[in-house]
Image 1 (cartoon, one colour):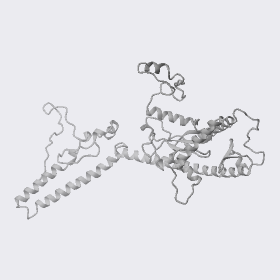
Image 2 (cartoon, rainbow, N blue to C red):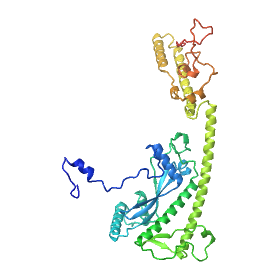
Image 3 (tube, rainbow, N blue to C red):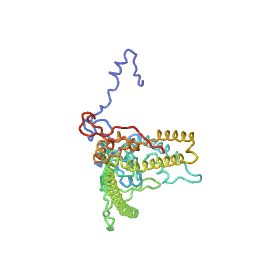
Image 4 (cartoon, rainbow, N blue to C red):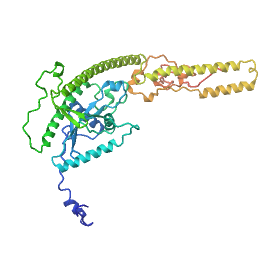
Length: 443
């Protein structure tokens, strides 16, 4: 133990009780305002907690004193097009953005922070594999940072999927009743994403101002307040999109500040206006695709529900109900083909008087009939009570009067003759036949 803190075996309990863990800050309970005292540690409660954090659109500021960096973490939900068209099952993703260097006022600590950050950059970028004769570009560094979830410039952002919350199917709209927690699928995602972006920008501006104040070691010089709108003519298309916070661009020397009204500022505003118009077109296309996908899904659901009602079953068992007639027809055709071939062989002129051949044909027929069974795809034990009510046919024609048919082997309680409650001796009403003996006609 460091600092000569040691004790013999007899005094170990007293030592650990009195000499250590005295200067540790006690952990406050319920420090998260989203967690109530009756919070239960389960997947449902954590999923609902994440849902309400995303719904509130409140970002989180993360600061590392060891490397002197900070960034903002925010939750975003996958849009409907990403789920229905691109088959993305993830409900949420975490976005890391607004990278900022906040060095310590202490020069010695600041130097250590710079060394640690450069070491982390070398560890990530040393894994880059480039073709021979090609130098690394800025896009290559961004790709490595995206791959290993590493932020190193201000203009960078990373989307990290949350892998423990997934939709069950990725080609249809999810049914909220199939989940034990809230899902973000049916909430207007584009409008909510705009709110989250505004909150992130507001928090980033506050962090930038606070980091600027800290870098002067509490010596705040008197400077003019930052004015994002220059005192000059501004085109009308730029007036509503001027950023409220200072603008930085990435150059070879690092992040470079762009003063409002300069030539670089107008170039930045021109590119920003192009990106906004392109994003608006994409958003409009997304809304149209979402509306078309939702209308197509609603139409498909209506058709499937109508089809299930027509066949007298539920949506879950519609596929098996449609497959059963096909399989039953195939089995019946096989049965008919074998019996026809058997009759033809028995009545063949060369086989009529051949007793040995007749015995073999009868033996093969008995073996075929013994092995010939039909099992329905839908087991009655697997049906729910609601499905049984839908499939109940009290007035259905009794087709099991002939015991040598395939339907006699079906174990469907609604399609079999119901046994009489009274015995044949004391009953005044004729009950159903209980004769289960099979008979076949041999030609």
